Length: 349
Length: 287
Image 1 (cartoon, rainbow over the protein chains, first blue to last red):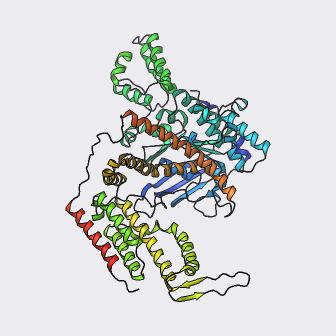
Image 2: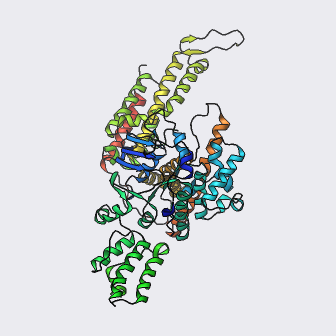
Image 3: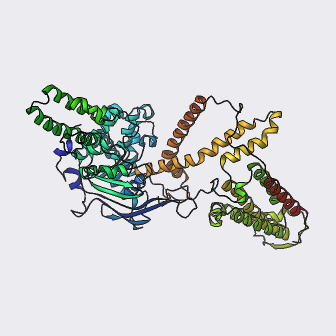
């Protein structure tokens, strides 16, 4: 995947035009958040006990964690679907714990794409469904139309081609993009996605991830996404928040978090496959860095190490390129296989 | 829209795991006891009988070790209906009281309408006792669902209906339908919650559009009801496929992992309930 992130100029276009909060204050701050479902009944269950989260302007944050760790509960606080029972949630300078805060205003600026968002579609045609949000905001016809066009363009759906298509005749990936366009048509400053790639085929997944990168690069939209897929996290995120046992267990940049592979494993989580590969190579006696999180980085690191060897006549040119190619082609379309030390022995040694 | 958590207020039909006597009873014993108790409840007409019934129901909650507050919370949504019912019963029943009991109050007829409201001793008693009876019915049925799993209920029902198979009652099919319906109540409630959250995130406002803005209210439901129906059909199709894949044939030689068994305790409880019902019927209540 292209790394659009590097080309991005922070604080461009959309962010500057709107009434930005005091510079320096993050867009979203969550401190010591607690949440109990079915509070006050015999069936109550604690979903969050002291979660922390932060999102800076223009940032992409990933929330990872085991099933049932409270990730979804956390993201549902970010756009005011829940008010904090305990702790603070500040979104764009507004305190959600304050009963006077208008939650609808918060929801306009923080777009939440729920899990399997294609299940929320209800209008017969694509255009009408995407127009739901803008119409609810009370915009006039030309403005609704403009927003539908923008939303569709953002997710790569042609306006003329798709606006009159029958919603329920679309493919799963297309339906999901329509649902996301419906949220984007509200022109949010922050986009929150709960497991956006779950259940998509490899192609739909790659397209969606590209879309997210483009949203941030071209429109300056800050993104929060929940994921189980460590490759996705490494590819997309600037910062990672690890939720375990209903609270924030770890946080930091992608590299900082994935460097703590043992702790992550202890929490039932993993690291990207290339990172595992680097650990395995190191265990096999090859002097490679282990804080490698993407395939591109791995390619550079391996080329360097193998280049050293080639200089000494240990490995041929063709072999080196072959290994780099294998790792590279595996980036998105690969089956979830495992690289074990044994697989590597043949190609490296 | 503030509350997005439905299951918190929907207590009816919920099962609360426990180990009390009521929890351990055979589902068939509980169903028969329920029918007997309903008979006792619906036939009570005296104040004293109503009071005894209400006390019995509270005792039932305590014996089942259910949190009283939680059980009563399930009744709260029905209170406005009961209030309306009480007012109407009070105002109108007296006019048609055939028992000739003394009149307690009658409205002075306003000029254009030759109509009076009358409250007699009998109609007052009927109104108050019927409220108590409705409350008892609600409590006794919720105690049943609080203490019995849905599988237990449907197996019990199927087993009770089994003798009727001879006269063509599809006992197994009925029980299966009931089981599926009950099974999907919480699932659909969750689904509903998900859809409402999704639409609220897209700017839908499920606040109050005004109490009498019926059309606006109905239109607000479209973004919820359409996805919910689609999801129901999708689930139904999945279920059909799953049943087909397991070669399901209604009632064909099915066995149970834990067959129902009537133990001495079950018979004893049934006897006690029967005796209670008979007493309630036979005692000449003074008021």
